[in-house]
Image (tube, each protein chain N blue to C red):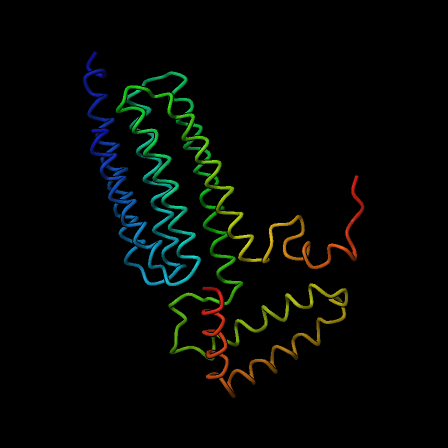
Length: 102
Length: 166
C-alpha cells in the first residue's frame, strides 16, 4: 500500500512538474514548486516506511520548513524586488536613511 | 483483538484516499485556467492529501515517537500551506493579475475596481493620508470615468504588466 501511495505521489509530481515547466506566469511556477515540495515531504516519509526506516520523518520536517521559507523568499523577491530587511527599499535607500544598528 | 485486524485496512484506505486527493489536486493544477483557481487545487493537495496520507502512516505506525513527528509534520503543513498560497494570491493580485471570471467581457468594471486600490496604496504611503479622504473619493470617480472612457488602453496596460512579470 505504501508503494502504491508512493507511485501516486510520483504521478502527482509529474503533473505538477508539467505545470511548473509551462506555467504562463511566474506565480504558476511558484505554486507548482510549492506543491512539488509538499509531495516530496510525503514521499520522503513514505519511502522511509517502505524501507523500514521510519526515522526519515525528520527529513520530512526539514523539507516542510525549507519549503515554506523558500516559497516566501521567492514571493518577497517578486513583490519587492529585493530580499533585504525592508524589502526592495533596503537596496535603494541603504545609504540615506538606514536605521541605527545595535 | 478485532481492532488489530481492522487497522491495516483502515491505514490502506486512508493512504488510498490521500493519494487520490494528491492526484486529483495535481490534475486540477494542470487543468484549471488561472493562478487564482489553481490555488484551490493546491489547497486540496495540502489538506486532504497530506492529512489522509499522514493519517494512514500514523495508523500503520501506532503510538510512538514517529507518529508524533508525523503529526507535527501534518500540523505544520496545515498551518503553513494556506499562508503560502495566500501570499501567492496576494502577490499575484498586487502585480496586476485578476481572476479569470472578471475577464474581457467586464474589463471596464475590472479597471474601475483595480485603480482605486492602487490610489489607496499611494495615499497610505504618503503621510497626508488623513486629509486625502475626500480627495480620494473624487479621484475614484474620476478614475471610473476614465475607465469608462478608455477601457481598451487600460487592459492593454495590464497585459503589458503581465509580460513584465514573466
